[in-house]
Image (cartoon, rainbow, N blue to C red; front, side, top):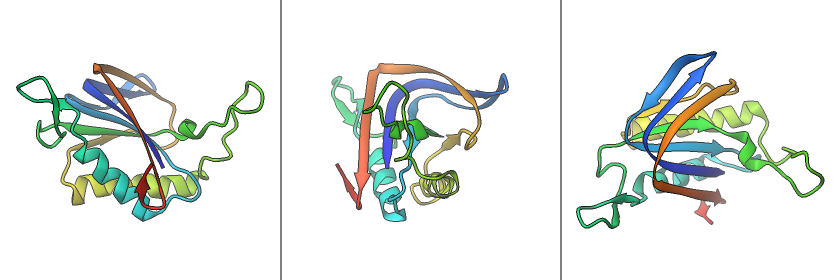
Length: 152
């Protein structure tokens, strides 16, 4: 599982030129799922994201988590995080999970963040053509990968 996390002051997602979801301060999380990802990977990734201390404290140090600042998560499925560009110029996506499996893990990730981690969550629509407008704060962008229940 891969997650590209962007610290944002706002993030808005549109589908068919209509606002679908948005957040103010928090994280835009682009989430990629591969064939071997498990529910354990999903939980480890979600917990790591919520615990990341990448918001500034009163001394300007990255020392606060998203919960500390009362932020929200904007979680969007992103199979292209598993693009394979080793051969030629057209990416292959054989490492990305099949849509049915990826959606199951994605939905579980969203539910775990909302219910178990008690985070405010907005989402995209799995498989839809989405346009995202965001203001990256910093900019701060972090890539995480989880495999076999461990952050790599």
